[in-house]
Length: 450
Image 1: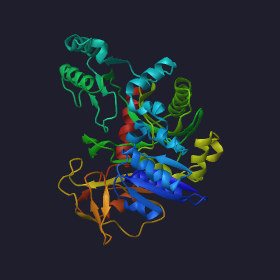
Image 2: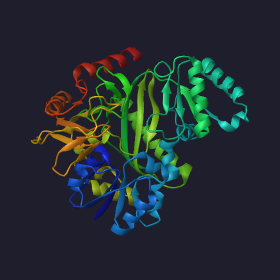
Image 3: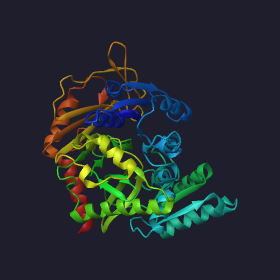
Image 4: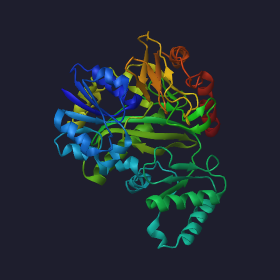
């Protein structure tokens, strides 16, 4: 069994780790934009190349002839790498380009849910450049009226294409006056031709990832991410500073009805994608949800494993990951193939001290503890390894450190103790997974729903 893993980062390391635990002992052929020491230690080969250079990736694929591919990041999935690999008779655990619009186009997803009567969206409108007929001033007025009158100046503006996690701006956080929102919407229209403007949702966010093969959907443990750079959920948004799961595969602030509804939305969306696109979605469907006053709403979909979410979920996978991948590809996916340990996990990301700017520490040495207990994992992200074995910081998130235990509190202590042993000009959020931070979520949702 030979698997082509197109990825990098700690997410790619976690995927490689899950593959190596398979009883089918697959040979991993890694294709990365930069060498990852964690993946390199597990792979038979590691090819360093631009993963958006499809001819280069396809040349490697044609040479190694893998049984299947796993594509980690969003850009190659949205760009249609799974389609190109399929032309070489290499199936992928990643959707085709037409189906990947569920992540690459916010407007596609909102329209998909609306046309298939899936009641999970906030109030929204999609504006296009063609609407204006060249009259941007008229469009400015129409957007201003929608934001002020229909959304009561509580709104979100979404760039309708991939933008490295920086395409969404929220009133009160990034946009002060209505005029700021209007101008950002016009900027989006000029760049990509379409913009989504929607109601700002108030609640508590969480993630539900599912394995999907057509209309077959098997859910993973629910995770909560922490995007803000600093403790107390302050500072700029990041790729994610850490995450946690609970032993019951739910989260302390969610009710059974909340969980059931999120799972139902993922299933309905998988069915809608099959009907809409006429071909089965094969891969990971990652729903970003928010628990609000009167239920559950969808914020957005991703067409891949999340990072850090994969770092929490994959270490809990007790069943054979290769068997799951093959079942996704051939349409035989079912619940009996997937089993997760009833454990809690807490992941804390180690980052350069100045992250998210991270200009000051790049290239400096970072040292991780050598003795890793069985109930912990370290997954390497933006870190390079010199010939002498030393690790050096990149400009982004360095490594995800995961604690695994019977309770969130115990998992948090395991992760925190390991984080404290990392040496170098780095930091992490000490509050992720703590009772104080979780209680804030519980209390916020309780007050919303009183």
